[in-house]
Length: 365
Image (cartoon, rainbow, N blue to C red; front, side, top):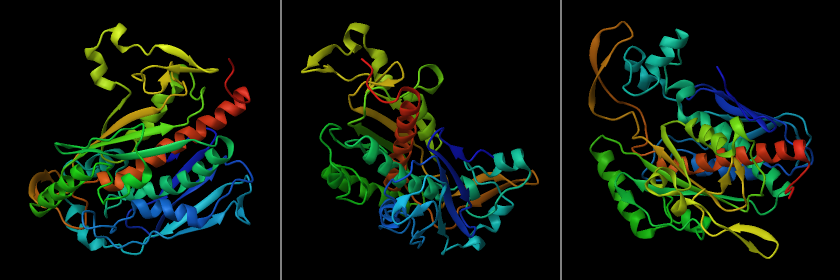
């Protein structure tokens, strides 16, 4: 099973949803980078369960422990291991699901592929696996702050169900995003989104939506031509997150409605800096960052576990029905925001180190 992500800044996550612990090992972090449990904890607290009335009530503090690779608050250049112990496992809630495949979950496909699976909480298919990614991203953020100061990654809920937020990627702030429990920077839309989530949860159902992300201050030159284009790496990163079903960058699918003359981003000089008058490319051209804001969107499907009876089959191949149990998000979007932040940060950190290794710096014009 591939649980490794990255080339130069490489992470490997481990653990199951209802196992003893989850965590991550980081290989390739440069030495003398500031690393602290407090900074990691800040990121983990943003994705943990039980943080508000609209997310799963599972009670986990997600307290992190750094096991290796750090001394006196800085990285040693050796592998960094971070672990988070699970405290509120309830495997008994999954007894019935051990024999019945949950619709739109990974139960059947894991059985078909491996012939065995973790029966509680989805195992590695659970969003709890993302704890390791978020923890690693806190370290990656410090690498960016040290080697490329000014890079900022911000994600927010763009849409939940059919309610869309009006947020300007050029001006949105972290404070605006974190000002409400749904994590959008549109106060009016946030209220309606929260009410919609509550209504759907009361009905035993679930909804999905879209998260938008902006990367500001990205250096020119990140990304590799052909197979490892920066947008391709971002797409892979985002589509590796649980419940994702779509990715688009810049003009995305709406760009197909334009002509080339309408879509092209004209260049101009701003002092000694090359700029573009529009940004339909989304900050990336030819697979390489051009210095403009990187803007992309990620689609998340409705949570698969719902409290309604659904048709399914057993592991023995018999038709049956199943009603969801356990503690689940009626909408994953609010807790997925830090996950999108994390994966974007990991991609940028990895490509920054790749650029330094190959070219020694940037730009080369």
